[in-house]
Image (cartoon, rainbow, N blue to C red; front, top):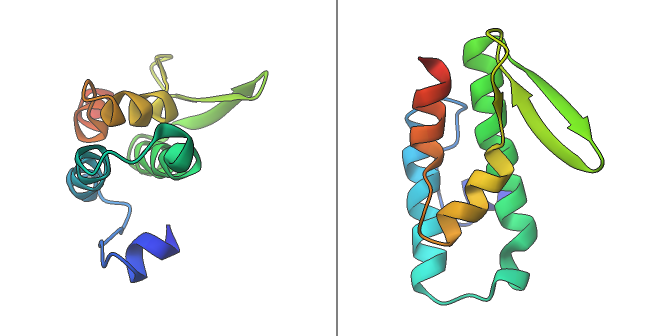
Length: 104
């Protein structure tokens, strides 16, 4: 995340609106045609960042099992922000909308 903050000058402040910028970064990577294997860890980091935004704003907690990580909000719902980052890269997801839904 430090690379994005400094190199790409993306403001990541753990606010829900910052996820709009993260969605844009993923969209730009996708449009450039960067192979998935080259951005796998970046997407994981962006998904983890989105998860931490949800944790900080909802009182959720991280859950892990078998190498996978989810967010469990206080109402018991499970969210997978890391997979959502992958979906964003595929053109079918949004970390901003995932956060909005988790905050509802």
